[in-house]
Image 1 (spheres, rainbow, N blue to C red):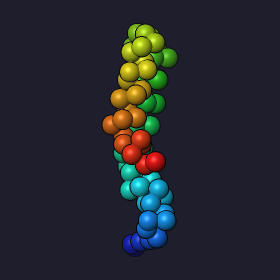
Image 2 (image 1 turned 120 degrees about the vertical axis):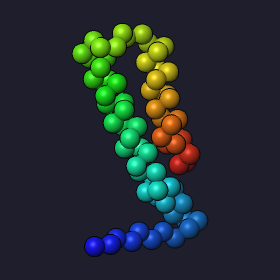
Image 3 (image 1 turned 180 degrees about the vertical axis):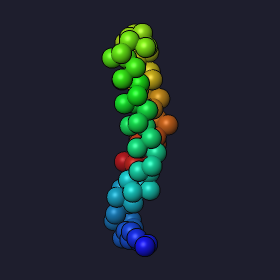
Image 4 (image 1 turned 30 degrees about the vertical axis):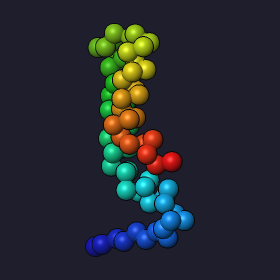
Length: 68
């Protein structure tokens, strides 16, 4: 089975970028989820600045900011 997504560019450019980067975004959510779990369980020490830095890195690595 094959599925083909079609977009009318440039009108649907944002939708195209979202569909094209879904794998990276899912990976970032997985990493964030695991990191938050580690914080809750106490495996990682909670330091506000470090948490913000790590979450920001996950977002930047996922290329979410490039979609807009």
